[in-house]
Length: 343
Image (cartoon, rainbow, N blue to C red):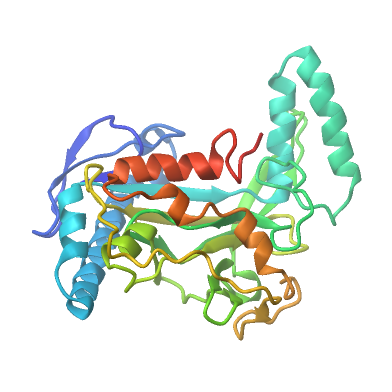
C-alpha cells in the first residue's frame, strides 16, 4: 500500500513491513517539504511522520483482519490491500484567538474595498466578547442547539477506517513587537481540558452523545460508511464531530489522521445491505456517562443532527463505485446546495 499526503511531489524508499509496499509519495500541502525548515528540531520530523503513518496503516489492516474473522470472509482486508493507497493528514484546529489574528492578517492583504468590509466585521466580532462562538475562520457560528461550538461539524467518514492519534492541545499566547503590527503567537503544549479528546460520537441505540476519552500515545479508530456497506451492516459507521472547549479561546487541537479506504474502482453491491434510515428517535439526547461536564449541551434534539446529515440512501446506489460514492457524499455535504455548505 501507499501512504499519500494530498499531492505527489517525490518518491521515497522506506522499509515498512511486508504487508505494505515500500514505495510511496509524500507532500505537505501547505508548507512544502519539511526539510525546508531551518530549525534543526524539524530535521527528522518527515521520517517520523512516515513511520507513524505506516504504523497506523498496519493497525488498520490488523483490525480489518480481525473484523473479517468475526463477520466471515476477507472483504475488509482485501479491499484495503486492493486500494494501494491511504491518505495521511496533519489536522490543526485553530483557537478562536488565532482565528482572529489570521483574519486580521488576511484583511491587511486584501483590497481596499475588502479591507473596509472585513475591518468592520472584525471589529464587530471582537466587540461581541468572550461568549461568541466562532468557526475556524473567525466567522460567527449560527445559533443551533446541537452544534453551537464545534471545530468539526457532525458527519460520517465515508472510507473504511479512520485512524487518529490521541490529540495534542496547544495553549497560545500573543505578543506585539515594535517591528510587527500583528501580534506574534507562541505555543506551549498543555493537558487536555477536562481530560477529554473532544471527539464526540452519537450512539443511536441509546440516543446519546458521548465524549471519547483516550489515553496519551494511544490511537482512535473510527468505522466509516464503506466498512458499514462492505460488512452488510455488521459494522456500523460512526456519526461524530469535534467539540471546541467552552470558555477557552486560546486552545488549539492537533492530530495526525490516516484515512483507509477502498480502491476508487471498488463497486458496492447493496441488494442485501440493510439500508435503514437514520433512526435517532425524537426524544432529547440523554447524558452519556463520559460526558458529564458543564460545557456540553445535554438536551440537544437529535432531529437537528438529522437535518445536517445527508441520508445514506440518497448518496449510495447499487453498483456505484467508491469514487462515485465519495463524490456524491462530498457534494451532498459541502456542495453548493449541500446540507453543510458554507454558501
